[in-house]
Amino acid sequence: VALRKWAGEHAALDTGLRDFSIRHANCLSAEDRDLIEQNIAIYAKHACVVGLEATREEALTAFDALINRQIRRIFLKRVGRRGIPYRYAVTMFSIYAFYALDAVAALEPDKVSLRTVAVLIGYTSSVAFAIGPLAVALNLQLSMCLITYPPRRANFLVGLCTFVVYNGMLSVTWHYGCRAPYSDFHFSGLMISSVLLILATAYAYRPTGDELDPPCKCILGEDGLRGRFASRTNLEADPDSDGSLDSDNLQELVGHWGSSSSSSSSSSP
Image 1 (cartoon, rainbow, N blue to C red):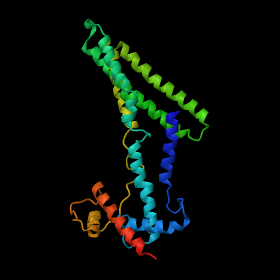
Image 2 (cartoon, rainbow, N blue to C red):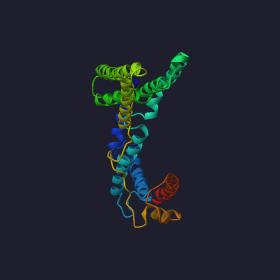
Image 3 (cartoon, one colour):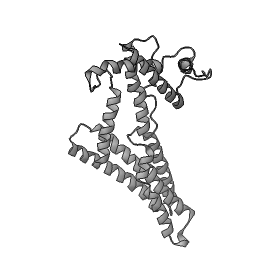
């Protein structure tokens, strides 16, 4: 239920960023809309989102594209492709790591062998790093697909599918794990299934790439972004720069834009 609720919030945030338009955004006071759009146009020019000669409409369109693409990519990168970062999914099932230590400690001294320890580590690693996170990814993906379904029906379908798949993967891994210490065939099967599960997990939680939306490129002159940025803020331009804007320059740019936009706003009629 909690994962499905987050899936709904994730979908709403993603849709809001993808379809955002400053022209359709709500404004507390309609009288302030003109001033706000003017300041955004000034920002777009100072941040090199558009050229200095761009019109106000072009600047607002470019700002919309910045939110729709660049900010959306940052959001998806933070929360992960499946709506939750892989490290958080692993944390939910990290208790299985302690289970492996308890199982090894409970073995009789004459039954402890390298293969037995490897089996326990392989089984618990499969659950903590693959089976559990895969079940979380499946739950979130199904929740997003069934976001328009009635809550009770969606919760039942998502819970049933997640339960069947999760316990199915556990059963197969447990089947090989119980016999692996005494059978080369089952030991090989456990190792192969563990590798396949980890590969599937790596694919499910692969980083969000540019296939979602290509990075928003600034309109640059011959000297690139840093050259134009330096000309406006009296910074030294780096001739070897690829035109990217790092966090330090972004903070300085925002500070410079804030002072410039204030003076521009005060001088505007």
